[in-house]
Length: 378
Image (cartoon, rainbow, N blue to C red; front, side, top):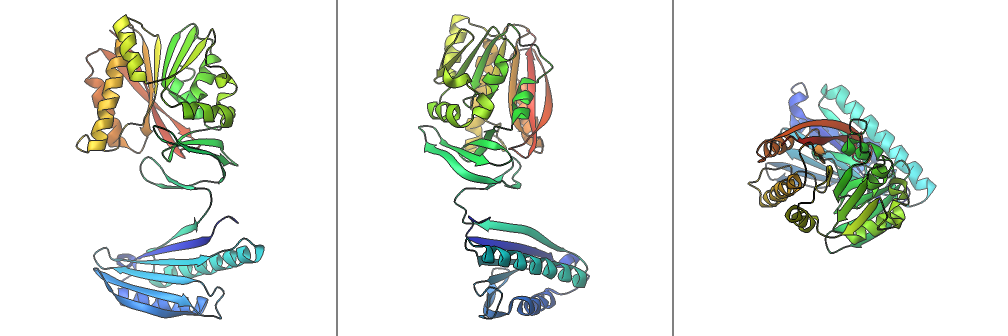
């Protein structure tokens, strides 16, 4: 908390849930409550859009003279919002002041709920200005807050922004272009991708597409496969995870090639095309590349991703024998339309296949993640 520069408390009031109390009456009551609790005075008020805006500032005798309040009224949405914001410095007195303000805001919310009969929601304080990013989104766009305390690594590679953050609860966590990829406490992700306990990897020839964090390779080697080939395009990911993500990859990536595995830095599409042309086949192929897109292929970015996914599928199944396995991660379980779209893609493959999906809660994703187990029948 001490690394933050400001706090923002958000309150929303749906006046359609307020037992007939008018929005004018609600705003008048808000101003009175704020003046009483924070010694605020009206600084600015005007119509804005389909509603209005009012800005209140704390006076010199307030608990925090830097505190400001913005009240927005949205007529079409039948909604009033409050943003109570104030700076914070890195000393205990200021943190105690923050706790006092938080308690007063809780009182404000409770008094509003009691007088209006409901419709009041308070969002926990947003911590602004931290040196380490701690707010991200779930796959279905829900706000997630983490406890990252240090940026261990940050570099823009030729392909993406690679970042590794340190967390008290998750260990070190890899982010690619600000998307959660793998944390040291994310064994459920790796086991979910493997469909752990449902397939015997002993003596299998395995191909991993992506997987530059090394977590999947590390866990597969424990299952005594014949050989594992891992192909990742981004050397920066592999090298940074080898140093900072050892809780997931161990010492596996200290060597790029042994008798039982090989790590290749390169474009997996190029290698899949070569394998297909040469008749090379694998017992198991893992797709540990991108998530499936949220939107339909009418969006150009999504269309490009879907085209990439379809190409990977076609090239991969050419390298699988009858009975061969294809495992991939998909997206969060809340993204039902995206999951259905992916299953439609599987059904359209020019191969006879059988597939199932399963879920696992991934700690760093803070959500249930969906994985697919696909068998090439013929």
